[in-house]
Image 1 (cartoon, rainbow, N blue to C red):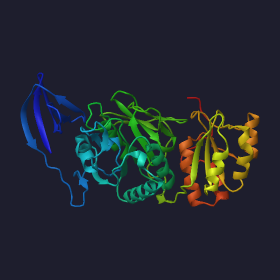
Image 2 (image 1 turned 135 degrees about the vertical axis):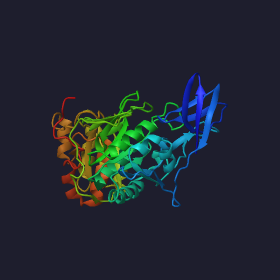
Image 3 (image 1 turned 90 degrees about the horizontal axis):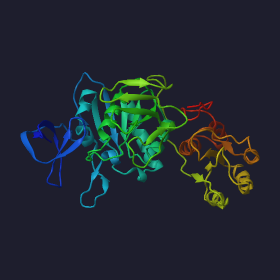
Image 4 (image 1 turned 30 degrees about the horizontal axis):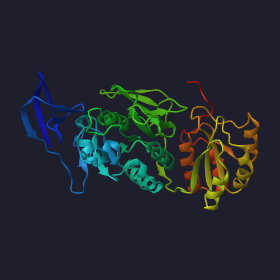
Length: 404
C-alpha cells in the first residue's frame, strides 16, 4: 500500500493512494474520505507495510488496546465501482476494509475474517446460521464482534442473530449506503463508530449507522427494533417503536446512552442455531384472496406472518382460512403502519381474527416477527412456540407503546 503527500490549491493533503480510471489522483484521506485531485504536486510517496497472515487474517498490533473480531459478509461497505459497467459490486476483502480506515488502529486491535463476499439480497437463513456460529466462537475470545453487511437485508440478519445468540458482549452490525471509493461514502465513519461500540458497555446485538446526513454522529440501534427506511440516504436506518440505544460522536467516539439496554456481562453466552425456513411473510392488500395462505400451507409451511392494515386487519373473507391454519400452524398479525402496535380488540374484524386463533404481534416489525417465528419453530414444538410469540425475548416487544 502506498501513501502520498500532495500539495493542492495551497493545501497539504496526505493519504492512501487509490486506484483511478481517470486522469485524477485519488487518495483516501486519514478521515476515511476519498478525494480526486487535479493540478496537484506530489511532495512525497512511500510504501506502508500491512501485516497479513498466511490464512488471510489481518491484524493491527497494539497490545494495550482491546481486541475485537471483524467478520465481513460483503455488501456496499465492502464494494467499489466497477468502472467497466458503472455498477457497484462486492469486491473488498475484510483486511482491505480495515486497512483503508487508519483510525481503527487507535481504537482497538482487530482480527478480520472474510466469511462471505456477497450482496445482502443473496443472504439466506443458512447464511444466518453459519454467521451465528462464527460470531458465537468469536465471542469466546474477543471483546466484541463487528459484522460488516449489506444494508438492504441487514436488519433481517441482525434480528436472526439477536434471537439465536445470547451475548454478554457487543455484536455490532455495520454497513454503508455509499461504496468505499465514493467521495460521499459513509463506510469509514460507520466503521469507526462501530469499533467504539464494539468495545463499549453493551451486551446485545445492535446496528450502527449514520444518524443524519452529516458526519457528526451515528446511532446505535437495537437489532430487533431497527429498519432501513430509505433507499439511498446515509441516515436510512431508524429505530421503530423504541429509541436508539445510544449515539456515537464522530470522530471522538464518545457514546451517549439514550435508552435501556443489555449491558456487558449481564447475560450468559449461548447459541441456539436452528431455524425453520418454512415461514411466510404475506402483505395484505385490498382484494388479495386467502388462496395464497392455502398454497403455502399445502407446501408444508407452519408459520405465517401477515402485514395487515391499521391495527392489524385483513378482509373478513380470510377468517375461515385463518381458522383452519391456526389449528396446526402459527399465524401472527403485524401492521403495515410499522409505528404503533397491533390491537385486534377494537373492531369486529379484529375480534374475529382473535377467535380464529391469530396471534397479535404487538409492536414487532413484520420482518422481526418473521425471523422470530423462524427461530421459535426451529427450537420449540408449535404449542410451546405459540406461548413465546407474545413474550419479549430480546427487546423486540415493548410492554407499552410510548409517545415519541
